[in-house]
Length: 126
Image (cartoon, rainbow, N blue to C red):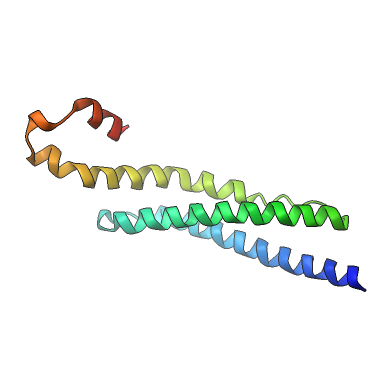
């Protein structure tokens, strides 16, 4: 009876977890719709938040796989945990580059040319 309860609990938590992971995939895909440069900071924060959420989800997945093994269940793959970072990668690059440009462009365009270190600019823009 206790084993059945543990199995049912695991199955319920796994199903809920898979639903959450699918939602993270949708959130990652939604970044393709963002394009307003005025929302650079907000977009970078959203990307960082989703990245942290995926990191936490990977830890949850490891614990769940361990629990599945203890109960003799087939181990879940949770492929969404690999899919989300791949989807997000170009948007992380885009929005962090835009944010760095916003932070530095005023000095580049209006500051003294003598104060600009070309090696720093090159490193920041790569």
